[in-house]
Length: 167
Image 1 (tube, helix red, strand yellow):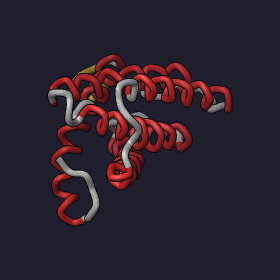
Image 2: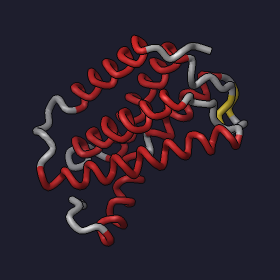
Image 3: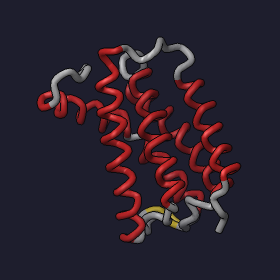
Image 4: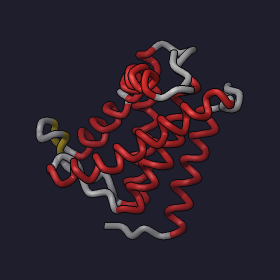
């Protein structure tokens, strides 16, 4: 098991930052109209996945993510970076390509977090696919479902929360 050090935290934050810049390379800043959508989606995803990661660990289908790495992964990576990616590609990119992009970015992040923190080390994905590669790939593909879940979730949420930008 690796220890979480300030240098490793800075390294993963630097990776998140680099990937964020790549994600936003052809996009204008998030508009004021999208600001509420960004913060609402980011908060909902971050909180739900933070709790879900722990519950999945308790259920034996996910390795334990120490609280600091779970926070970084869910609040910074998913809450900020993946939400920004979604707002960047949701109108201009076919859904299947959105899913591939989310899975690919998530694969890069999971392997980096594994190298830096020793996380994502389980040897099965839902007790069906075996080996650590299957585990990391399985969760990366699951992250690829962010666009369709967000698309339909945002439509439902838009009915209850005024001011969200819903397509």
